[in-house]
Length: 135
Image 1 (cartoon, rainbow, N blue to C red):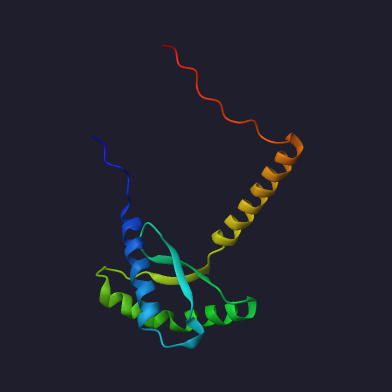
Image 2: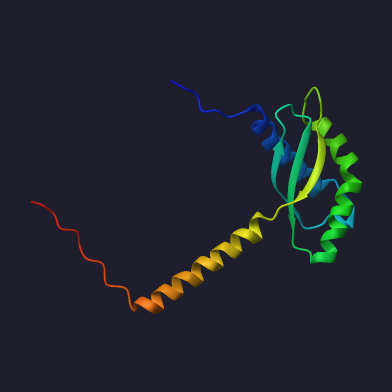
């Protein structure tokens, strides 16, 4: 039986995601870093660089302050991560804005509007019929 390919970088990335989220929630005292959600961590195959994707509910100007606070706290977060995760080399942390949520919402809105336009053009949808069985 073949095992599914689940790379070590993915496993370590999942662990880093959970630990960084916990550090941000419990240890960081900076008020700029409130309401931050860690959505994903991409780790290079050599485990030297971790891109940490975060989202925030802050408006545009507040978002800039959040990322400034994250960059300021990156050394503390990395040190705390070193105490929690035993790795030979602790990866450098790079915080990146996650745009997948708003992008997905926009795609869903477009699909809903297309469905409404099709429904209006075609009229009401026919009622589903029972499948014909060959008995």
